[in-house]
Length: 214
Image 1 (cartoon, helix red, strand yellow):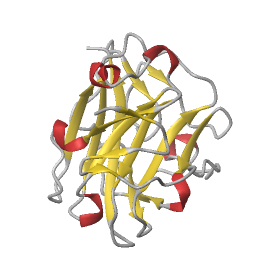
Image 2 (image 1 turned 120 degrees about the vertical axis):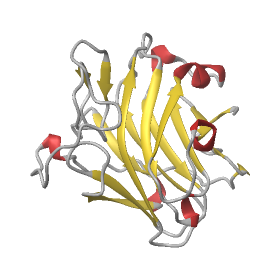
Image 3 (image 1 turned 90 degrees about the vertical axis):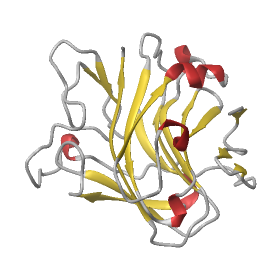
Image 4 (image 1 turned 135 degrees about the vertical axis):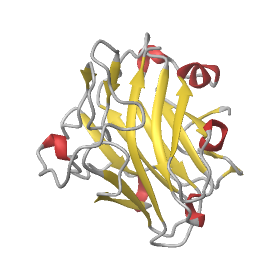
C-alpha cells in the first residue's frame, strides 16, 4: 500500500475522506506495567518469550522482552486521533494481565498510535507482532501502520486478521513497511492502528504488540 501523510490514510477498502489534522493531545493512558494494579494471572501469549531472544516492547505488551521503550507520557505517548475512539482495559486477553479494548466513537474513521517525541532507529528489527479480536462491523477494515515523517499503512487482512470474533496473531515483516517508503532509521511512530467507519460502541481487543529480530 502506498505511502501517505496523516491527512490521507489508506484503508483496506480504499482511500478514506481527508480527516483533517489528527488530535495528538496526550491521553495519559497507562498499561499495568506502567504502574497499574494486576488483575489476574499473567498469560505467556501465543509465542512466549525465551531468554536470549531479541524482543522489543513499545507499549500494549506485558510479556518478557530483551528491550523496552515504555509509554512514559513524556517522550513516548499514546495518541488517540480526533476523538475517534476510547481505550479501555479488558481482562479478555491473550498475554499478560490485560488487553486493550478499542471502542469506536461512531465516526467515519478511527485511529490511534504510539508516538516518540524523537525519531528512533529500528534497523535490525524485522517483524511487528500484534494480536487482534473483533466481530463488530466497525473493525471489518483494519490497517496497521508505522510512521517516519509520513505514514505507511498495511491491511491487517493481508497478515491473517479476520473480523470473526476470534484472536488472530499477526506477524508483519518490516520489509513491507520499507517497501511502502518507511525509513527504519527515522521511525516516529512504531505502531499505528486505523479502522474504517462504524457504529459507536463497536469494539476490538488489541494485545501482544512487540518487535522481533528473526
